[in-house]
Length: 506
Ligand code: BES
Ligand code: MN
Ligand code: ZN
Image (tube, rainbow, N blue to C red):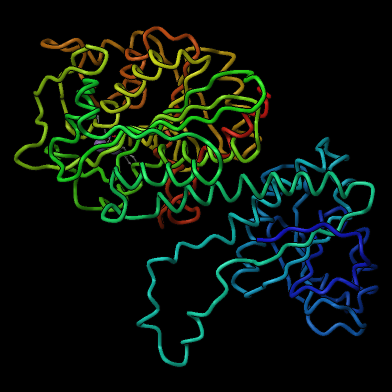
């Protein structure tokens, strides 16, 4: 998507769709006048309430305007960032469905609206761009079009993206709008990149493909990527990753992404992402219903790749190191079994109570390795770790676990700003009782109660006492299905949150 900002007269902008966004307050005040000026019948306002995401398209202006058609877009009361997100996502989706190649949005009022609610025009511009990109993303690369009816053949020629977005803004704020929009473009496209990886099924995205995706992104956006293969992982003694991989036909990978800013880094941040390319459960096999969704069990890894990509493209002054242990989790004659005891990279031994609690085993190695090797200021892991977290918080909110109150607060705030919401859960030591093992140092299962907390307590054992660690369980918000009431498929959850967090530390 090409981006431009213009101060030209609204009637002169040649676009396939010209969008006039209105908060409910501005709708009352200005809409009738605006419509008349552009030559439209204001009668449409009887049916348009300005709810966030509501839109109506108008054709056949009585006046000479360069735009092909005009749409009103509701921003709700414009007070909540969520309203802006909802509106811009709805617009992106609608514009793509309408095959709009050139989209123009009138941002003239943005400074007024932003000021009345204490936002910056830059922030709203970024958010709006992110919404347009999110709404106009489609996962269609696996559709051949071969079965489309002959008369519908032209559908295969459909535009797959909005080619150009023009923002109209007054001269005084055009610079801010442009800067914000450019940032939103980076975050939105990095997030869509993560969604693409999540949406790829297990047969098309093995551990080696995750490593390859990281390499490609690093090459394109300027960060280093190192991949350890099976031999190197064996030499390092990563028993967690190797044990989960035992049942698999495909080798594991351990990928390190390293973005260093040109100026002195204000912090060194490690991001660990769970990269299970398909989680069948292993010998503790999952039920058939919904098992296909487990292609999304590498969403943490996708988030880490997307976040590094965004940090590099925005040239943020923070060193960000991504660490991705990747494998699938499969049953076979060579697979890890319940009751097995394994030795992790740290030397800590683990009794495998359930082979389906595999995420924590590969994260254990990654966390210990990262803390030892990089001595980071902060460690955050992203993982689709437990169904229990979905039971607790649902499909839109991630569970946050941290041993550092200040870090937890910063993450929660970044979550609100990015719309990728997290809710803090406890980490009291009393929960560690549940993961005691009779035969090993710790068990990978903790019984029925508080499943997301016992998983976090397990991870905590592998950070070697690091005092600034957070674990974000994204099992709910990483992936949408028919019953989750949100976009279906990968969401790229976490990319925006990390960007907000890194910006705060910049
Ligand atoms: N990948 C799953 C967690 C998950 C469930 C993610 C649903 C997304 C949607 C994880 O590996 C898992 O299987 N966890 C088990 C742990 C249990 C065996 C202790 C779970 O949550 O049931
Ligand atoms: Mn599992
Ligand atoms: Zn899993």
